Amino acid sequence: MEFSIKISPPEKAKTSCLVAGVFQSGSLSNAAASIDHASKGFVQAIIRSGDMQGNAGSSRFLYHVPGIKAERVLLVGLGKKEHFGAKEYCDAVRCAVTAISGTGTRDAWMTLAELEVIERDPEWKARHLVLASSEVLYRFEKMKSSKAARNLLSTLTLGFPVPAGKAAFESGIASGQAIAAGMNLARDLGNLPGNVCTPSYLAKTAEELGKVHGLAVEILDRREMERLKMGALLSVANGSRQPPKFIVLRHDGAQKKEPPVVLIGKGITFDTGGISIKPAGEMDEMKFDMCGGAAVLGTMRAIAEMKLRLNVIGLVPTTENMPGGGATKPGDIVTSMSGQTIEILNTDAEGRLILCDALTYAERFKPSAVVDVATLTGACIIALGHVCAGLFSNSDKLAHEIIAAGESSWDRAWRLPLWDDYQEQLKSNFADFANIGGRPAGSVTAACFLSKFAKNFNWAHLDIAGVAWRSGKEKGATGRPITLLTNYLIEKAKGNVRRGV
Image: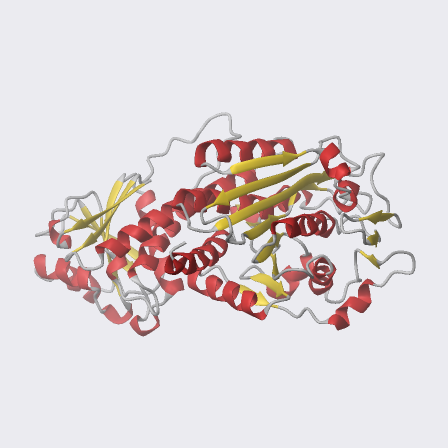
């Protein structure tokens, strides 16, 4: 998908499809008003007829519009003008691109970025126009024997009548394309079946990212994990024939003395639940249990392409969780890399076991912050649904930064408690603590478990179980929370730019 900016009145745009917005009650955007003026009231006549009322999610194609050079005009409903914010803007872009895609049109001229969006600047509007468009156009057909014949939109022009703000829009397009590429990588990895996307496949993907985008890559195998005494991670891998991998990616965007941000992504490429096996229904969706790891790989790709002036390290512990003859059993006790012992009461609570060793490994980098991302608990879906991720943190400052990044990127997170009271549920008669704390507050006790390994640095945990993929007819990986993570890192990098790093 190619994006460009052109300065021209909309009525003079030579394009297959010219897109303009109409607010509820018939109020025209500036571009729609220009089209209406050039066509001597053609747009207003359509509105008076009742064929376009400006309701959010509505659209109407107009053909042979007098005075307009475009082959067709697409009017998109924007809803109430006084409520036109981030969600309404992104929805309008998706509505437009979806409608255009249904026509076979390969190029379009989009005027929606000129709209005023509550508390959003030109760079944000351009970035999210790219992201929303890419989301609509994404298709996963890698595993199909024949590809569907499609004539998708391939060129999108952001049109403006005056050059004001052009540099900001260009910056937004560039960052949007980098983030979209990272999200598409994460979607592809998530959508691949577990017999293809194995731990070794993820490791190979990381190595390719290193070669293409200049990231330093190190892959630890089982022997090296045994040397490091990653007993918690290896306890999960014991039941699988697939060898576990521990992926280390490094983006050196600032001076060496600058402490890095460490991102950790859960990489369970298929989760049967192990000996505590899951019900058969919808178990196929457990291929998505590596979406945290995919999000870290996609984020590292995006920031490398943006050449972000920040040191960032990505860690992806990856394995299958299978009920093989060597699998860990309920009641077994394992020793983590930190030396703390864990009683395994449920082998389906495996994500925290691979993450805890990764958190201990992260200490060696003396990080400024550590953020782990994981499809960790079904309890988080019960608590928050599929709208936002659950956020836990031992640092108010870090939590506020992540929440702000989520609000700005419209990839939101909601903070949940991490009080010591909940630690009581993890007590064990036989080990330092157990890996589960019972049904009450399941997402909270999972985070409390992780917090035991994050005492020496500022840490945040994002439980993305509700947002990493969709079920049903639209089943597939979403690429979230890459927009949140990249926005957080972009804001961190601005501090380095101000300091001249």
